[in-house]
Length: 365
Image 1: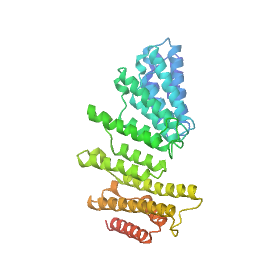
Image 2: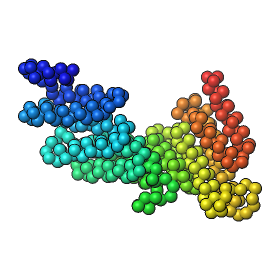
Image 3: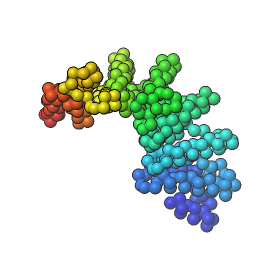
């Protein structure tokens, strides 16, 4: 249709001249399309829009605006194509350059930044979390300079914490130049959100259940002997906020499962640490001090996995079978594996029975 408008306009039908509304509508359509190559189509239309704008002498109603750029940036960022986050960042940089050159219609906002930060989180590329953090700091700088719409909101913080949670370089003990792990960086962001909300009482930066669940998952992915303990601390903070009246922080199955995953990671890290030190796996039959300590840590982590599962099932049963609290197959499987690693046969049986009870209750309903 846009091509047809151009053809008619070239033939002298001046009343059908394409304008920014025409272009933005088509760009948005491509941005929302699931068709392969739609992001590239949207980007090509933005370039074509600029060419037409310049060819027509810079008419105001033809000039690309923030809606044009935001639609394309979102399309590219969500495309999941290789280097999509970097491509979206390039468009953001162009947007900022044109703004600095005098185009006041191109001030980026939180949605623009959030889409790119989320793209970095989903890219699973090395160093993606640092790029996401740099964008967050840039937003903070813009906000301090008076760009109100650039103030980082909860969803932006969550996206950045998710980037740290998924960063393949930041797992395990501190592996970055800053000397702290990605999980610790994610937790620092959560701490910053809590502090900022307490000081400003701005709902736009208030931590929610996604914030806490993401940091718990970051600790689970860190795969250290302290993963479970650190995840428990965040889950406790989450529960506390809910109990004092913050419904946005209501714990759910995602948070509990992430905490269980963290304790499962602690078991694996304990076994790995023991193997590195002694040259063999944790021997449950041995009475040497090293093996006994290893066995004790595994048993404690497995016990905590089962406790968390029981708490989640109890919440699910007492809260009118709230679907957000229903344990998943992954939840049960993680606890079963933890009990198996701890050689806790009775624990495996209890998990199996609990799983049967929850499934049967759903079948009756």
